[in-house]
Structure formats: structure tokens, C-alpha cells
Length: 139
Image (tube, rainbow, N blue to C red; front, side, top):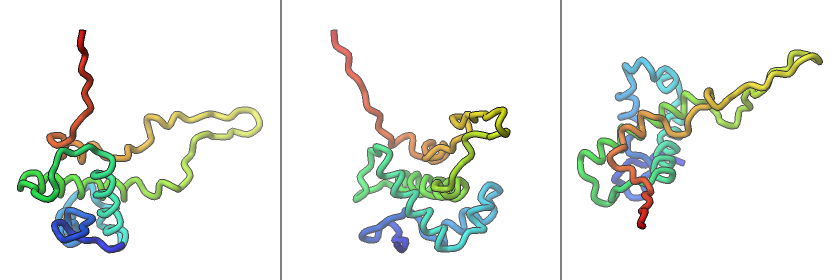
């Protein structure tokens, strides 16, 4: 799937590959992104946009975005794409236990080490636009 930048019809990313390259050019925490091929970067940008728009309840009208809303989405798209590349392939098996021979098997706690699906920085960029379910209590 090729990257189609917003606001082009059927867009699947808020930013272009050139914009992403420019944004991450001097970023200390984007080593993996900068070392990736254009195909991987494009796939990460498209996947990141899909994740942000499908997994978060965003209170945004994509047909009429204000400048600050578009900037927040662009930043979140970039940050999430970088996060995805840093996480690597989620289908790669991870170490969840360590076998020390016939004597002992140690179960490793991955809850603290498991990467988040959506990075904190992207959530922070979109925090003003994320709607949370509310509960009304009446007595």
C-alpha cells in the first residue's frame, strides 16, 4: 500500500515521507527510523495513522480540521511511526521464560517490559482530542 497524504482523497497518513525524513533528520531518538528503508518508513506512517484513528476515540472532523488539530495529528502520526519502528516486528517471539536446565525454569514478568501499542508521546499530542467514556451516576 502506498502512502497517501492528507487531505488527498483516500489518505492514509497525515505526513509525507519527505516531511517525516525532515522531522527526524536530527532527532537523537530516531536512529532506527532514519536507518529504515523508505518502504518501511511509509508502512510505519500508514500503520501509525490507522492505529491512531481506529484505536482512539478522537473528537475530530477530518473533513474540516483546524490548523492546530492537523498539527497535533501530524505530530502524533510521526511519533507513533517512530515508535512502531523502534518496537520492531510484533510477530517476533519474545523471551517469556528462561530455562536454566532441568533444575529451574524462571518465568519472566513482561508486564513492565512490554511495549505500549500507542506511544505516550502520541497520546500526549492528541490528549485534547481524545474522548473518554463517562459514567453518569444518579441517585
